[in-house]
Amino acid sequence: MSELMELSPAASGSLIASQAKDVQILSDGVECAALDIVGKVEGKEMVMAQMFVKTPVHPQKADSAGIDWVFFADTLNFCFWNNDLDAQYEVTYKGEKYTGYLAMCAAINRALDSGVPITSPSFFTGVDVERLGQLLIGDHGVPIPLLQERAACLNEVGLVLENNWCNSFSKVLQASKNSAPHLLQLILDNFPCFRDCGIFEGTKVSFHKRAQILVADLWCLFEGCGEGGMAGIDKLTMFADYRVPQSLQHYGVFKYSDQLMEHLKNENLLESGHRWEQEIRGCSVEAVERITARVVEELAKRGTEAVVNSILVDQYLWGYRRQHNAEMGNCPYHRVRSIYY
Image (cartoon, rainbow, N blue to C red; front, top):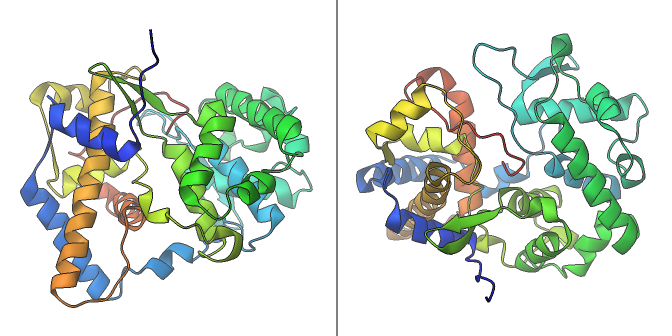
C-alpha cells in the first residue's frame, strides 16, 4: 500500500475547513478582524519591522550563539499551560515576571547567565530529565510541563546534529541557501520531533507549528537579512497553537458547536490527533489565510503600501490574546498534552 501524500499546512487548513463539522469560519468575523488589522497597519501600530524587535528575553545578536538559542527554544516551544486552579509556570528574571513560552525563554537566559551552556548541542544532547528540570524550574518550584518529553526532544535533535551536522544547527541554516521552504523541509527531514501531522478524513494533513516558527524565528533573528534573508518566507502559514483560536473566537471568526464548546468550557482534555483538535488547528490556519488575504486586498484598495503576511497576523493574534486575556473568559482553548504546540 502506497504512503499517503502529505498536504502542506495551507492545503491542510483549506481541506479541514471545508469538511469541519464542529468549527465554522464566519465571514463577518474574518471581515471584522481584517479591518481591525488594516486600521492598525494604517495607524503604524502594526508593521513588519515590529517582528524584528527583540524582547529582553530573546537573543540580541544574529550570530552562532543566537542561532543555537533559537533552535534550542523552538525545540521546546510547546505546551506551557497548567489547569487553571493549579500553579502556573512563571519565571521571574531580572525583576520581570514572565509566563508560558516567555517564562521558558527567561529560564534559558538564567541558565546561560549562571555559566551553564544550556543551548549548546554538546551540552543538551546528553542532558537528563532531572538536570533539565532544575535549569528550567519555575517560580516557587513549579516545574515546566512535559519535562520528560522536552528532555527526549533535546536528546533526539542533539544526536542528529552530532551525527549529521557537525554539532551545529548553523550548518542546517547554511544548507538551506536562504530559502524558507528549503529550510522548513530540512527541519522536517532531519528532526522527527518537529513533524506535526495526522490523518483527517483519510488524507494526511500537516500543521508543522514548531518547524515553521523555527524558520520564522531565524528570519526575525537576522531581521530578514544575510543568512536569514529567506526567500519564500510568505509561504509559511500561521503557527497552529492553542492561543490564537481564542483570539479568533473573540473576533467572531470562529463559531464552535454546542458540544465542542461544552467540552472546552469544562476543561476536558483532548487526545492528540482528535478530530476536534484537527478542526480547530486546521480552521485556524485557513482563517488566518483568509484574514491575511483580506488585509492585503483592503490595503491595496486604499492605496496603502505595507507588507503583511500570515506570520505577522499570527503574531498580532497571539499577542492580542495575551493583552486581552481578562476579556476572554468565554473563549476557551483546547487542552492537549502535545509536543507539537
